Image (tube, rainbow, N blue to C red; front, side, top):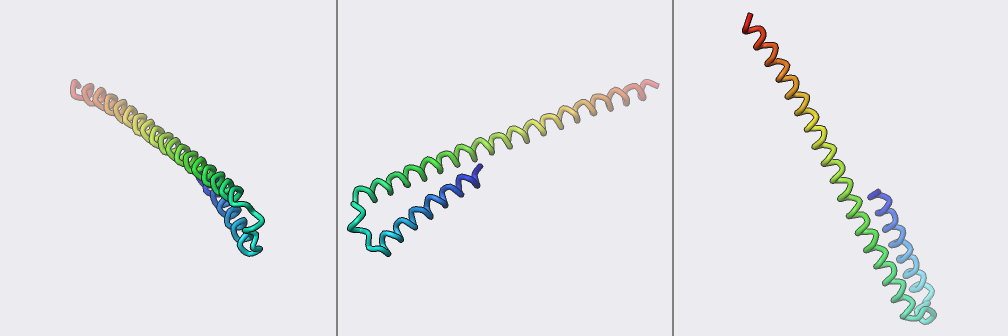
Length: 98
């Protein structure tokens, strides 16, 4: 999840770099109006912000899932240990009576 988001960010950044490099190398500044490049930059910036928010949300959800799974495992281990201790107490108390 997180890696795919980073991959998308890298692709968008690469596309922006290629566009900027092509415009500089071809002297296309006169061909591309300032408004168009401004709109492209704003769109790329908005997409990157959306991807970062999505990545943060996915990371948060992943951490929450891992934490709840770990807590469930600890709780299950505690219940098993408690049941074993009760069985041991029952056995030792029966041995003391004899």
